[in-house]
Image (cartoon, rainbow, N blue to C red; front, side, top):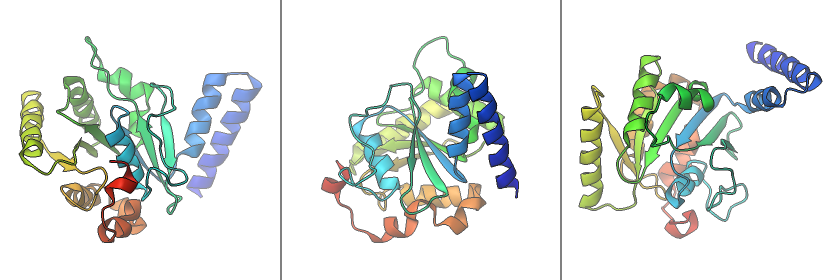
Length: 232
């Protein structure tokens, strides 16, 4: 019933926005109508690794119908929604990277991209997290949102990945993150490296995802890696 009332309220807001020709309000309301039960924000540069990660999370290859494409056709500051083909209650949202500008206020980024609407957020990068991303993380934590995760997208299984984790942990510690944690994820082969650990941690942090077989977890854990199909 609560979901029905929410939808009715949003439809009424949409009608009022159209009647008053407030296009910004129309856009915001349509976005809210599209929000699913489980929404995961994926922050980071729109690189090949991130595109592959978005597709792998939905069990798709780069050439599959509905797959995210690289290079992205979206405006650099646009939020792009990606529904899951198997789970209608789950949607991924491709968020632009946190700007590296200075001065920077995390509130401005979080407000612009409605950061707190997401059940969880992956802060992705291919090297080490930049300082402004850490300030966004700390601000989210201060608002009692503990479901923000730093993810290194890296298919390299050698020492360089471990070096990046060590350097990333040093950055987080230096910026005041009390218990820093960084996950190394192979974007084209999720069943390897740290992704299963990340899923376990998310299951503890987000009990609501457990009955939903979050992001086709059964498929991820049983299907072999196919780097060519995934795009890397």
